[in-house]
Image (cartoon, rainbow, N blue to C red):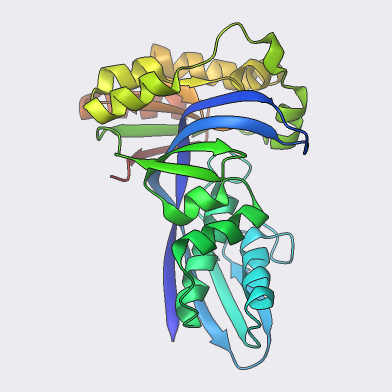
Length: 284
């Protein structure tokens, strides 16, 4: 028996950091949604106990450093599963890009192994397991669109944003999320993006107001550290994207585009100096 799971990328329509918590993490408030750029996982049982991961991508770890491996190990240990699993990871989401590729792989592994082994774990429990692996994993378990609070694990599902094209561009650099959060100072912010305004725009289906409400306080750090990201954002705006923002801690920048006629111009303009450019749709 084989089980297949899709692991979509996420983007942050809004990312606010409120303060640093006593446990060392930051208290955040985010609105996240998913786009149709995805890894794909194939899982099948092995005749012996163990976890084996393979991938066509030569640049990702295939051992305990891999979040899908960690998800499989966690579910085996927590539910006393004495069976082995082989996971093939067909990788398409860029690594260390602010798109939660690793977190989505972990979430897909949790969902898939739940089915493969007939564990009947409810979704809220899968989310709690996911929170042990990473702050974005619970959202990737549920998918859709949500307001996320706490470390990102406290989720409130909301309606999906109005459908549009999404152009993603990742500069040829990797950004450390821990480094960006380590340099961030919430006290120095002059203003915060409005979660309530963005949520209202989404619920009203107003594409223009969604674009106007985009905000990510981590840009203040990443754009300063990496001029390539700042340049990417300016270029996407110049080429005519309706709304432009960095996703997560970066370095990927996304542009929301209402009219298909604009998409090719933006894509071609970015491809002139950036290899990793993707044109996708919102997953609604």
